[in-house]
Length: 377
Image (cartoon, rainbow, N blue to C red; front, side, top):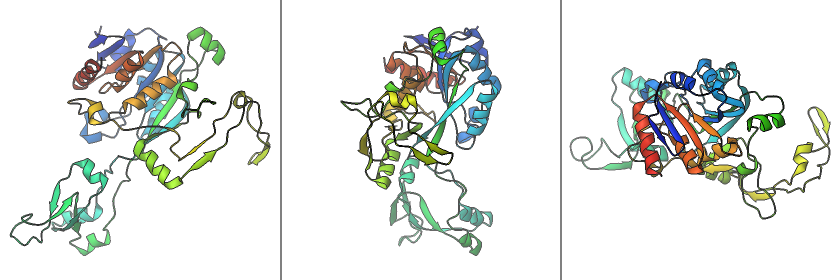
């Protein structure tokens, strides 16, 4: 039996393979799953990211979930289809897919023009330096001109902070100048799945204490006379929110009292007579502002990550807390993170006062998680 690597104040962390740890847990003992599994991109040459976890892993996760338990799993834009299929093939129901938009990613692109020059050994002349935000994120320092008055490279004149801008050295490279192989990453999918319910949602709530999502706790915006905006499947970081606001300007939506119906309107399937019954049961939220009127938070800062946290895919703590709030039960229940990484889900659960069981294969990541948990007591 694998013993906990850390067990304190309702947070339990196991160091090991989830296929070895999960059989130790009772069947139908977990109320929700929030996790960030490998994307299968071999990110930064990391061995743990060699593949997307297949159905066997999600079957093991599904076994310990109660009927109706929500499963939230981050994925990569190129591989989330494999993640979705694996979760579905394991017998879980796909319910939705969040889009987490962020504005701080940097493109991992090959410069085709530079590759052509490199292939023939041609030396490119430095003619400037890029000063984009991407350059700052990558940690580039000052770039010097090859046309410096003094002898040697970088002896007198600089172009400033950024990536060196070089001119094509061959006719073939000039033809492909400006061509690359990848787009700037600006969003990540979060698959929302559910273990099939036992009968109806009402029966499942009574029998298992699990049903649906906490809509009211996830509403956006504050209003003295209304509940706030219904939570959406779009999540933003602050930079993405600012970019959207800049493009859209001020938008305004109307407010409608409970029990009212919209006028009949025509859609592709013919006519329909307004809002569904469940939507008429409460007020709709009217407000004004930019397109960022969704949940948003900053990406994980250096302080939030914690000292020595070199995990490459740390998620924002506020984002994880928001997701936990949406899918936790009325009593909090037991949260499972079977791909714990540096422990953000566990830390979010701790700050919310929830019980959380985490599993992580890499001992170094376990040590980071423990340091974060101990530093935030």
